[in-house]
Structures are given as structure tokens and as C-alpha cells.
Length: 263
Image 1 (tube, one colour):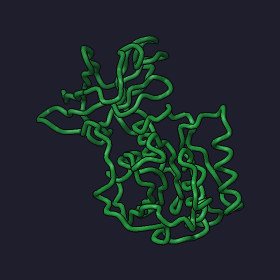
Image 2 (image 1 turned 45 degrees about the vertical axis):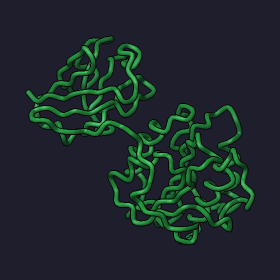
Image 3 (image 1 turned 120 degrees about the vertical axis):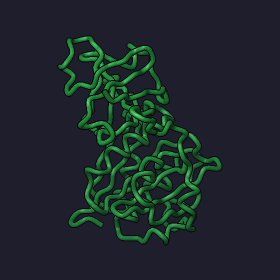
């Protein structure tokens, strides 16, 4: 674990109106009252696994080694999907095997993958069929912050058996990169899966639907209300509207194709 106080993050689609998040924190505190819990977000759109994947992938680099990340965006709760724990070189991840960890697994080696079959580390051996976040994931995450070994949580599974989301890959074709929109944020920015290091320091332009936009540096490089393409703070090429909502303007959705051309 990290030095000092153990750290656990929560990422869910539970929102803030109901007590679901607070109940999970109560379970965690009952197992390890010394853990520091960080809320990544609880405003993932309901059942939006792709949005959870993106937010997790782009949050993890800012946390110290040994952090435990609990993710509960789980439309298949109580069904046949597996409940899992993943160990990477720096972090541990707890949640459903529904593709939410596919971004992490693509960027970091998975050293161990475990199906959570040992009820000794659940809140109860008879968990709710509709709230594994409370009865399994929160409890398992809290036990991990106490130093429980990941292989004690259940049976090993093959990392290459983990569910992958069917998102467009970023692929090169001559002087062009083909990719897609992987996330639309709160501001309506269309964040692609084309990373900055595939684009910079070249001069480039992006095509999305009927629009072709030159690569810029800041939102203010275009007048208010105009479309702009740039590298966002997350390190991905994005299309935005200065002081506006690109998602609404372009009627865009996750998975829409984009092309970056080098000039």
C-alpha cells in the first residue's frame, strides 16, 4: 500500500440524491475507519460503462502507488457478469467485469485478475442481488486497504478473458489517424481516443462529420460560440465549442468516427 494513510477511490453512477454512496462509505468505515476515501465522481450517466471507463483511465495517474479504486457502474448487477479485482504494478481495481476496466488493462499490465468468490471479505455471505457496491465491492476494497492479499479474494482468472468495450481503435493510415469519440464531458467537449503524443508537434486538422477544424492550442483561439480542435488537459485530441456545447451542436455521440490529418 502507499505510505501513510491508505487511500481508496469511489466512482459510481449513483448520483447525489440518494444515500447509496453514503451507505458504501459506511461499510468501508466499518471495516477500516482509517482509510481516506476520495470521490472521483458519482455523476456518471446511469449505466454508462464507457463514461466510467474514461473517467477511471484519466484519474488513476494522479494517485499514489497502492491506491484501491472501487468502481460501481454495474447494469448487470446480480446477473452472470463477474465481480473482479485487478492488480496492476501501481494500483488495485475492484468492480464488475463489464468493460469498465478495459482502458486500464490496455495501458497497464494486469499482474493478477481475481473473481471475487470468497464471501469472507464481503459485507454479508448473502449479498443483495441489486447492490453489490455495498455488499461486495465496498467491503472488498476496504479489506484490501488493510493489507489483505488480492489472491485471498477468490479464484484467479485469465486477464485476456476480461470484457472489452467495443470502442473504435486509434489507427494510422499514411498521413492520417483514424479514431473515435470516447467520451463527452460535462461541458460538451468531444474527447477522442487519439492521444497527444500521436499528434504533436505536427501541424494537424481533424474531421468529424461535415466539419474539418485545424488544431489549435486553447479554446480562446477561436471566437466565442465557434468550434475548436485542440489537445485537452487529459492528453487527448478533442473538439469543443468556445463557451458552448459541441455535443449538442454536432449531435455527436460516443463512438462517432473522427480522422486527424497531418498537414
